Amino acid sequence: MTARAADRARYDRATAHLDAPLAIVDLDAFDANAEDLLRRAAGKPIRVASKSVRCRALLERVLAKDGFAGVMSFTLAESLWLARGGFEDVLLAYPSADRAAFAELAADPKLAAAVTVMIDDPAQLRLIDEARDGGREVVRVCLELDTSLKLLGGRVRVGARRSPLHSPAQVADLARAVARRPGFKVVGIMAYEGHIAGVGDSVAGHPLRSRAVRLMQATARRELAERRGEVVRAVRAVVPDLEFVNGGGTGSVQHTAAEDAVTEIGAGSGLYVPRLFDNYTSFSGRPAALFAQPVVRRPGVGVVTVLGGGYPASGAPGRDRLPVPHLPEGLRYDPQEGPGEVQTPLLGSPADDLLIGDKVWFRHAKAGELCERFDVLHLIEGDAVTATVPTYRGEGHTFL
Image 1: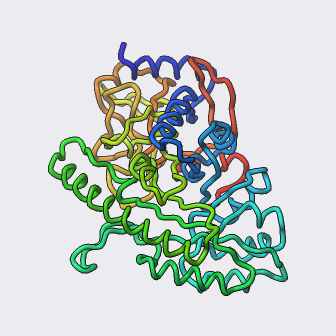
Image 2: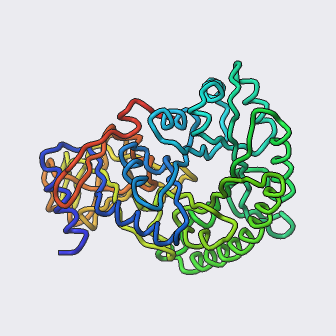
Image 3: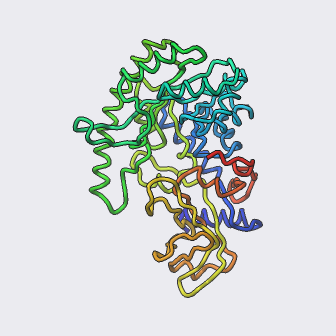
């Protein structure tokens, strides 16, 4: 029996009393992935990206491990909810225009001490001030650096379009603007190198493309390490008591951790290891989060139909954004239909061994987005469900 077949047998036994659709997290794999992230971080603390987990119980589980510290959130409303729930160090990774939430933040000493907001433009400071509604608490801010690689005098850009702050001078100028404005304090710098951390460099069947990605990433790492160091020095000249410099992502943990200027790593997807992280040479993890759909039809030889399954991930549309049939091995989509809104036909010889009511296990393309489809996660240890915990959705929250 292969390792994947053994996993399927365990998951089927553990959930035999549960009807699909359902979602699970294999805690043995989850914990092993956490340990691998810590190993690659080489002693630098890891801030957990909540958008890649979207389950408070699992955020608490990983933060209880030595080496993980703090949450990187994705909306201001989520940040305040986590802080009210006892999370004491929440970095909002994206700028916000949520005026009501800013008013709440500025009026509550506990929230203001726990939550750090992201800015990359003085206009964001003005929005926060206009939203204060009398609140006088000092708002902690983090400055975001654009990590993109610019070549040929800027005519070629590689990387996400995030912050407009690219040079040390630009970031230092914003730090000075914050220092001059009452009610704000710069406490950190964030630089997420998505073109390094979030792009696979070993795509099956595409050796030339994979080599090009590796060359690009090596060039980008060198350029960013030098520029990030210069940015940190420039900002520390304005803010000597800077608390943290956050960088990295699941795919670049060990490289970012090697930079002296970086004090902590941001990562989250590496805990679940969705399918987009199968194509990396820098690490390999164990799939920990899966969902199961029930077989409801057998249209013919070599075909079964499962209920639902059309759960595409965000990003540029493409086949790599689709969930992938994982267990039993050997199933594939019908190219004329793909994963459907209410039913999904699957082709392959394993279909002939599946009965009505059997489960087919899938992996989502991205990590936390799976939790937007399910109210609960069933936590599996060995071949038993040992707990069932709510996702954000199960607690009544869809923050974005």
